[in-house]
Length: 453
Image 1: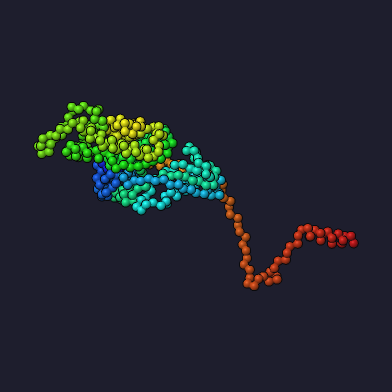
Image 2: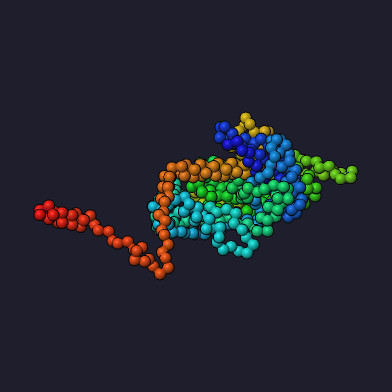
């Protein structure tokens, strides 16, 4: 696949643009990258459309210049505490013309879910089938309903919705930046594509993406996404706690968190001191590294407790063989893996996108393998897979069309003369034809009698 795909990650702290394509080895080659501060976004939601559009333009321009490619269409990530999820069951009757369940029947059932009744001001983002039932007989998770004989197809769905206003604001900001949206993708879904593999999803795993404004959770089991949620706690809350407790500026607090932050106070030397320059020739402020770690642990413990509650709420806690995968910028805090295992009680690892990247062709590979870029790279993967699936469907449809027998040529229709008003005259009426058997009988009877005379 030579076509470039563009992923646009509109986050609370940063807006990042990634341009990539499928490499020859099957991995992802990132050929363009741009990042800028996110202005106009709060907790994953676009508040100021014009400011956000300006930030988008800058990030896209940098990526476009690097790739020497004009960006026109993008796959956009969406998050925010307005994201909700619900379950629903749908069913359809299989047409009598279908001997087996066809792909169009399954798609029809999925499409029907986009018309279910929602609360006012909500819009469907994703529909994820959970399991299928054919004629009251549940199918095993690894059995595709396409090709099964049946008259009634039922499925349970996990449906992700978002606030209509927030969705419109994202679309308006992207359009204001002069771009067209190919699709809007829930950010933890994109992050999962770049940090997990099929084995993780099959075994059961909880992906936890700790961003700047929100923490996004996606739980997979038997290869299917089973649970999604968004928590309004993330990296910015920790930064604000440091700023308020240490009485320093926000950018200083962010720098302290990144450079010296730890989730376990016992893991740092209690004698280590950080000196913060004062303003306007004021005295420097000294902060203990252990005190800093205590502030971070207090907030991160609350966040991880809520993550644990969401996992428990999903009912899949005992099925997460692959454990918890932490990603996003917040996943780079020192000792966060150990604190997660202590609080949630499940094996934890840090998820990075490097296993999906082609090291030979991706620009600045070492920098792109950071967890904070999991969403943006995942959006590129999502777009590539969507395009490839579309191409496969088009090829299959063309092949099927080519195999269909040619339609017979239409036969000429004998022209019927219109009748005269009042019916035909006696001269116009044809006498009924005498059958061949009767003709033979008459011929034999009369002519044989003549010969006999």
